[in-house]
Picture 1: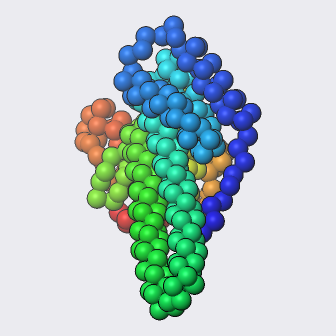
Picture 2: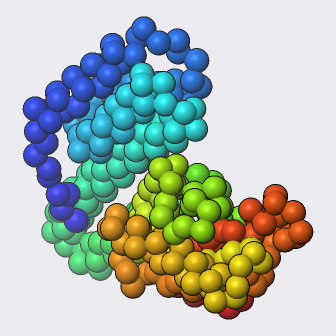
Picture 3: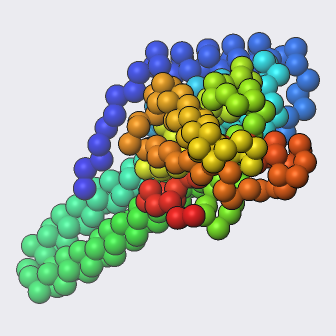
Length: 314
């Protein structure tokens, strides 16, 4: 089994090291009291000090340097702790990937050495066979060597499969963490119908379907989520309170649902992901006998589908 040789660019590694150094220097004036970021820096320095990692996983280390740079930048800009922790966690995982890649390549090199040794054993067996004129004994030795090599190959393949499974599991954990983070940022609630995001009446003027300025941040987060997970769909449902006629309430709830849908499409969300429906004054979530309850009933709800795009019916 021949080992693939990769030519690594020293300039890429140097650029990554300079980027990380600049990031660390830029953050030196800040208090170092973020444990996750400190761990990410420590992990990166440990990997950086390993000559094998530098030579065998330069590309992965470049990605780790970039990820750490983003975490340092977020810390320097005094972003939210959750964001800094998230970026630092991703940097730690990228360092772990670089270290795992190094271990795998070291294992491949060991297998290559074993192959060379196997060839030497075979040559020695053939020489001994000629000296003794004992073909049968030589064949037995060759068979033993082959059996040993087969066992080594099987063990190496098993180790490679296990390493791949571990990396895939880690990637799945990262994706799950990212999804959970985005869902928390959307303030989505788990219901019998799935995840539901409520945009309250505070984002619209009374009896109007145009957004107030404060609505943009919520819509930006929702648009970002739907673009990041195109397999998910969203059903946009408009509701009103009981004030006014059925016809006017139905029209207002329809226009508000359509306004949300159009705003998401304007931000790049695929229209095929979006459904809109109006329910007027039906399905209130509070009493219409007081102003506070009526305000809660004037709302737009976004029901998110599961990963297969299925939305439970109301």
